[in-house]
Image 1 (cartoon, rainbow, N blue to C red):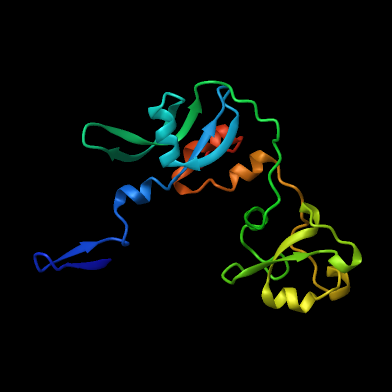
Image 2: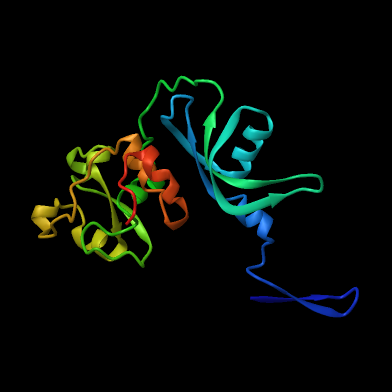
Length: 194
C-alpha cells in the first residue's frame, strides 16, 4: 500500500501497488482461440479487448473484473475466439531464454532451486559441439552452472532433474494457466481442477 501526497490540495491518498486497477488488469493474460477453438496464442487483455471492439474476436469466457470507459463497460475477457480462421503455418515454440525458463518452471535443473537468478546451461558443452537446441539447453542457477563447468552432467556427477525436450504448443500454453485461468483448461486438454 502506497501513500500518495497531492501537493495541490495537501491531502494524502492511499493507492494499492502504484498502478491504477485499470492498467493492471489490462496486462492479464488472455487465451486466443482460432475459429475452430484451437489455441493460437496468449496475449494481453488490452489486445484482446481491441480485437473484440474491432469485431475480430468474440468473448468465450471472462474474468470477474469489469473494464469501464466513459460510455460503456464490459467484462474482462479471459478466452476469446477469432471471428475468422487464421492459418498458423509455424506451430513450433520459438527457442528463447524466456521459453526455456518457462519450460523448466523457472527452476534449476540440477539442484531444483527456484528462488535464485537463473542462467542457461548447455548439457553437452559448446566446445564439444553441443548445439543451441531444446534438448541441449536447461535452466541452471549460477553456482550449479559454475560447478558443472565444461563437463557433461554425468562427468560432473550432477544428474538432471528432467531431461530437456522441445515443448509442444499445447504444453507451452498450459504453463500460462494459473489460479485466474482455470477457465482455459478445457481448451488446453487439461483436467478440470477439483
